[in-house]
Image (cartoon, rainbow, N blue to C red; front, side, top):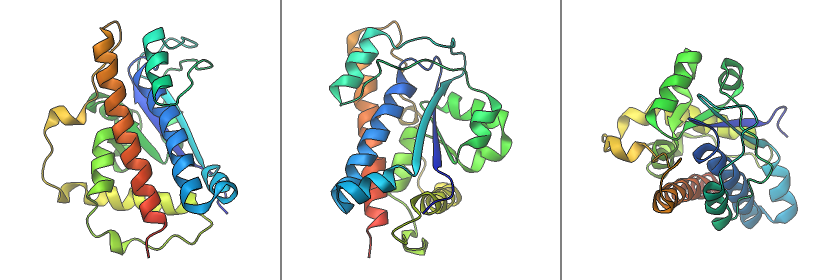
Length: 212
């Protein structure tokens, strides 16, 4: 089993809308995916090797999710009732195995704090696309059935080294809209984009760990 968890850090601006939604939904979807593929008990043991956190560039410590964000997260199975915002620190980025920004500015600011994170930082939608269209996936070592954290580190290294192999994406598709203080329609757009990207990441991880 893994010696330490695989740490995923979700980053947005205030850590009260997009990144906590992504945090909650990825934790949930990945656990569901692993349970489906390995059974409830083994799936839960594997899921325990992944820790998902979130932070915001200008977050006010302890701030709660607004009602619209709570409702949007709940729509997809999330629960933000206990969420307390935290400001992004250098240590958060340094400790993360994977940094997923909700927009390009969040990836950029994370890398400015810890330059070596340029290899392990992506936008959420960029990383979902990379996993879906991953070049040379057969070059990845097979999952040994135990060390999911180590396997995911290899996946991130592989994806980071091959991000330039894919045709350029439309820049606007790399960013998830910030819904804060906007209409419920904008919250719905953000929630749907997060749910889609998180679903892709979870399914592709499941496919990678069970590939022949």
